[in-house]
Amino acid sequence: MKVRHKKNAPRLREQKRDYRKRNFIEITKRDLVYKKEQRQQIKVEIFNVAGNKCAKCGFSDWRAFHIDHVKGGGRADRKGIHPFKYLRQVLESLKKGEGKYQILCANCNSIKMYEQNEHGKKK
Image 1: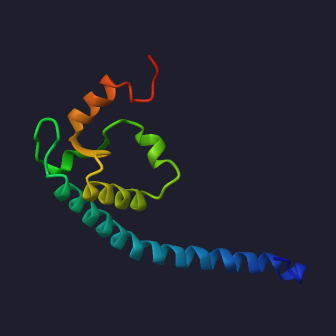
Image 2: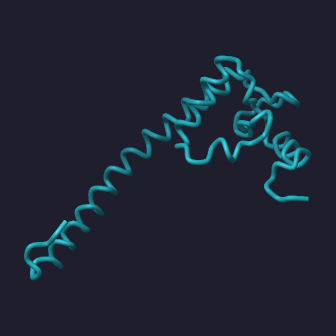
């Protein structure tokens, strides 16, 4: 976008910056609550479909649940995809019974990552 009058350019830039700041903050505060609720709802649905317990040890506290890729490759699967879209993808896969994902507690997930060398560091 070209600025037609150079003497007005600094003032116009400042007005645009103020507008973006003011409106982005208001929109973000409203949307954050809604998006957080949406993520929580889809996670609850994922956990319900997966049985609400760890696939290995049977631990049933939802606060420690992780979504695990059965055959590994989770970083590559999530790369370049929006987190909410990823959660929907996991939910659809679990509903179809594809067997790509499972629910593990934090301990079992960490142990599995270590045993299968999925933690990102080469031995």
